[in-house]
Image (tube, rainbow, N blue to C red; front, top):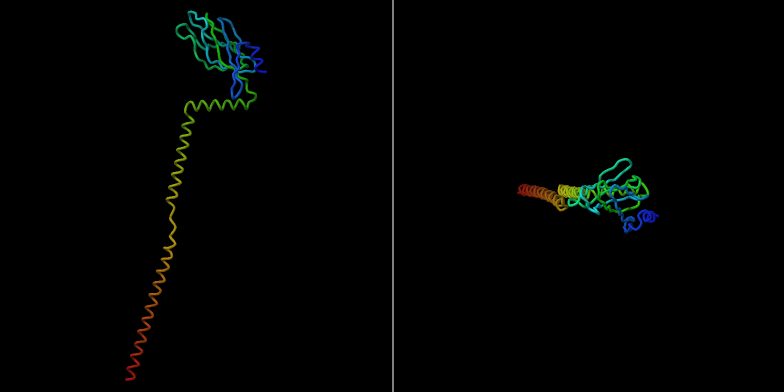
Length: 213
């Protein structure tokens, strides 16, 4: 339905091109001096990307956009100085914008059309995508990603330091060795007692021998 409306509005000047996201159509409009031309067709969004002089004439030529009762100069074209220029102008059908030229030359306006979003959800998704692209173009997401990687590296280093600072458990052999030392001391004490007993026995035997004599 949209393509039929676009073709009926622009006729042979309309060329459709495919897009993986949504259908897009080429827009071309010839704007003559002091003559108002219709802008955006119904149910569409217009992206104006370029303006060029068709029949260069002396003097300055302003491409104007009228919205309601206000008019705005989009660009100024002049023979020998600037006969064409790139634009990044987005207009919707609700704005009812119209083109006209203040000057003596005819200006060719080109761009592309795409259908309006069907819901507010699609609007927000597109706005988020545009914001993401703008941030990537300015390098903000790259800086954020780099900062996040640095924070992860710092966390890993802190974890490794915590593991190194943990006290080591006593080796089982050391504990076993301690028990052996205690047992050894007990055996030495027992041997000393046995020697004392033997000395006492020897003294008793000597006393008995003296009595017999």
